Length: 399
Picture 1 (tube, helix red, strand yellow):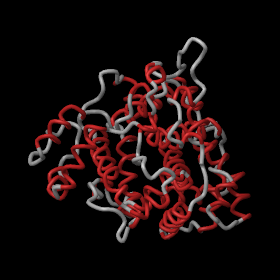
Picture 2: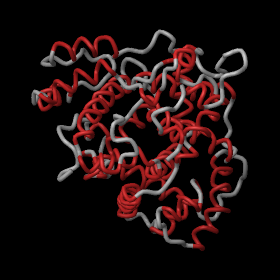
Picture 3: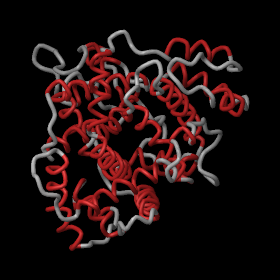
């Protein structure tokens, strides 16, 4: 068990070694969390957690799901028919924070639009599969209701990423602010439900620690935003400094909307990389639950018949993540596909970015791979809004 999963872990700033001699936490909004001993691994979302626990215990979730289904756009009025305390809560949270920079958010949206090819690949075969070797996340997903239907779960997860990457994500006509708030309700429900599962309690590293803490959400952010930023740098995808800052800002706003406290949110990519090295990299490990989830996800992608073999999928996961993770997940080798990917993918990027004039060998295959991932997460070419985010009423069937 990593030191960060123990009850006596210090505040995030201290745990990351980011507290200097003067007590300042470089890259974080303030040093107040470290000074007060606040620990993101023991910080949740108290107000909505209490509200959702009451709604679940009173059997009110189906009515809430009915009420929030047509609530989609950021400029939609709050749905009627909600319990008063939930409606009052959403009136406070369903808005951008005062520190959000709309110019940066618009630049991030444009950046996402222009780099969507790489985002599809990295979020789908990178972050999506990495989540299966984050033990706490894999166990929480597997034993929750979503773990029993990975196609539906993947589509709902993609809805979050799709709405975040949309050109109008944070605009009144966009959907991400609402999507984030719906996701926050789901997280609160899972926090109440999972501790009731003896199966989850049997495998949880600390059964008395409620899942989806601020620390857990930060880990997920690093498996998504930080990972994607680093891979695009590694792949030499052209990005301006302003675009990189804007991309980070969109994620800062996103995790704020998910309930992460301001003092825990990294303020620079350097701080984000430092956090990731401390809270994500050391905890990656195989689990039974993770292997099952990875097989489900890759199996679903392979079912889309666009000429992409399972061996090619396996090797792209190894290329994006590592052979060690590929071995943990028992991904069979396809050395011919591995050789094509190692030489073809950098050339594919260079051609798309106008850096080489000749279309490389394998260009069509990479295009088909991207299409297969998109079709999976878009429910076989349907709109992502056809897979609404709904609040669960229980855990994995039989769990």
